Image (cartoon, rainbow, N blue to C red; front, side, top):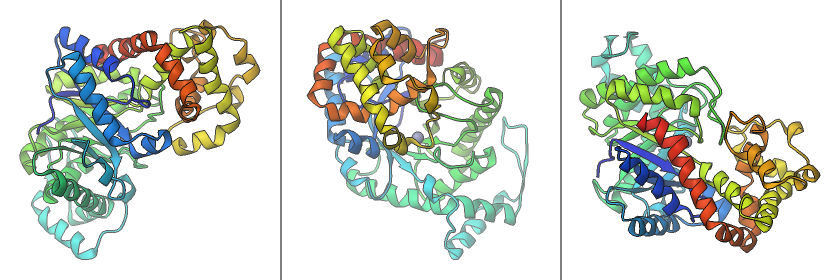
Length: 415
Ligand SMILES: [Zn+2]
């Protein structure tokens, strides 16, 4: 099983928008580009909402059959580790092996020695076609890379072999993610990370490096766009080189875990993909949930009250709701509108603050990030939320489709 050139990771917290999401990639297909949908959901998200990986599989299969989607699609066990992988074995065919926590853990000294010996042929000046900078590789450099990454790579091997034993060779797509690491990877580090994965016999097909800058949930990129452009450009060259040097799958490509809505980066990504003729996996998360809240708010008086309640009932639980996302949200709490204020808002007042339209002066990044993490409140509302969502099915579905197509797929793949 090989991942196609372009793929879009889509999340669906409540598992009701599969068809609406698929409509967006169908629009892209009509416009001339096949982007394969990959439904992703992490263990954290499943446990906060009370869904199972098999629910995602059922949703994806159902959406594909109803919509008549003829291309591939996948179900991603997102950010799993040895402890969490088992329940994803039946339903998933894409595994994001998250080894960020193992970066920097000291490897076994004899394993480190073997690693340095095996990569000794790279000692000297390392030139990667398409990367201007060269790197002087010495034993000390290889040892440093081994100390940083070897334990993580061996962990990826352990998780990979667990999935392999259950699913069989070639029946799933392995991604390796280090995007939740604390430090951004340099191009030559990515090169040796890929080399180490090949050495560990992990046929990685998508690799999610940590880029510099902030990838906060549901809002735009915070950081130096030019620096990101340089990193991506180098990383794409590294991937191409690593495929041939290390014999990795030809389908290997970069996976950008965006946390959604990195609109400033989309034109940069678009240009880089064209320049390199490269593929891409772009993972979003939460953008569909926010569109659901918008759709519910727009669906009438009852819906508006329910949408407001997700926010106002969440406010007193601020710490608890933000805690699992501590490193990926930056909310100025003092600027969050008070519940009494929100209660007076019209649907338009609410939606214009929540919707990610930076041209709208009312757009509120604090409110948007907070609603992003407040999905737990909606999950606990049970039938009150799902009933409102059901009643808003049409408008919410339209919001979901338009958002994915107009704001994500079009600038990324069609401009
Ligand atoms: Zn990620």
